[in-house]
Image 1: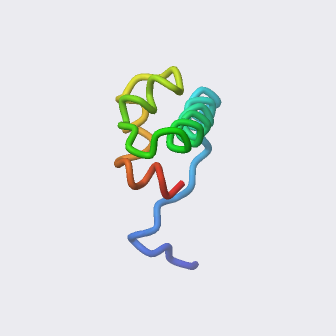
Image 2: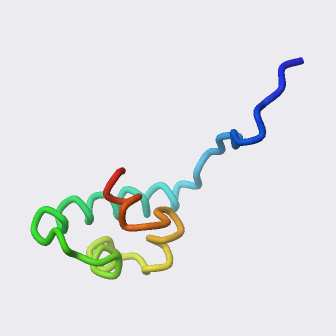
Image 3: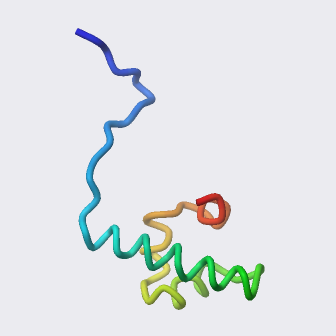
Amino acid sequence: MSEVPENVKPSRRRRSDARRSIDAILGGARILFGERPDATMEDVAQAAGVSRQTVYAHFPSRDALIAS
């Protein structure tokens, strides 16, 4: 039996509404950062039509969002 390293989390399927939120966040961020590189996470949330908490639920920091 093979062991899974402790630092590897099992992958799980995202709910369809979570996937839609992520897609909206990424799409909004691409457009917004192209126009305003200094845009905040609140700005991204507004552009994506989601709450700031939803953005942070999927992307723990602005750097993590930009890296995506």
